[in-house]
Image (tube, rainbow, N blue to C red):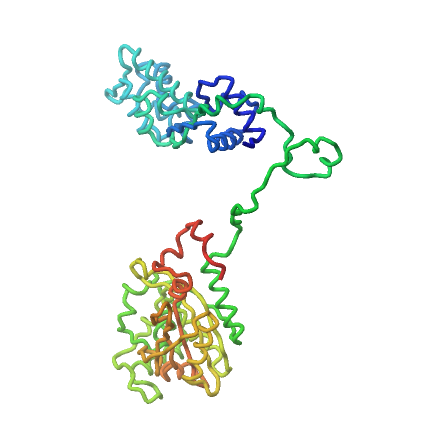
Length: 498
């Protein structure tokens, strides 16, 4: 069999005491190595060739935590207080004296009192009394100090005093544990019988360099073989998060289709978020259980002309021919501050600013609703929103636009079906075919006159919205929306590049 130089050296060292088991430190010293990786690598190769046996034992290693490191440097809290008490006269050992001494901080005083009681001290009439005799307490303090020193460089649990370990485990930050594995190496019968004469080390060439070829040693060297059929490791380089990659993909598609991107603020008013969309003020979506209303700012001013127009629309339909919702419209309700519940508020405000300019715009942003977290719901998620306002804008134009978008996303089979939304008429839901099933991904329609008239829009407005997370679940093949926001590096590395 072909053995590397490290394997030969380790095997030769093991044969010097063929019947013994060797620890890591012993092998490092015998082989002249300073890195345990040499022992691990050579030992594993020898074990695969059945020349060496490796015995593993699970161990718990105890070392000092942050408080323990401070105690190792400055002494334990109880030792400092005990030394102070021994130096004080009996009439100056009160609690006030301890606080004034700065031996302990105010936060440590209560802990110190408990530790002193554990050493046999008592508190009588506000003064500490040392136990008689003090021998037991002093022995305990010495043992605790020795325990901390023992843990300074890490120590196996089996080598520690069980009673002291139990004591210090109850004290926060003094000691901490890590689980590890200890290994010992020993020769098999085949390893003991292997001829020592075949264990002479030879020059082994791993990399051919110009310096190597300038001499003659390479002619008698061994060249390390490489198995070109072995699986190569997959490089784990940096990559965008799947959600960010999907957002960029969607953005590029809409920009390619001739749309402009718009943005808006998270904090909005109930007026722009709901009233402008002809959502009645007594609609369930406006209740606290669905919407995050704010206390700061609790109120945001809205121009009076918009409030007047929304009042007319909601109460009697304005000049649209609608009867409105009836009842009384509240301007105070309209000016309440909230976290936006959809990104449609961005497009509505955009239309209010440019009602007489043809446009094709879209936006991608976070929205907030008071949802119970489960596999399909989050209180914070993303929406994709878009509008087309131009002469001749119509429902067929809207359907064609959405079908083109989804086709570019990789879903050529798209269908629409009638639906109802308070602010569009006609309204429809968009579905795509995925794994043989139709899945609903968003809503769309033509903004009602009750929405566009107060804004002064010149032409019909085609609008649509869809949930980004639902689309992400479709693209990535997930059945739990929470997976998108779990910091699972292994899962992230294995996601496809979008």
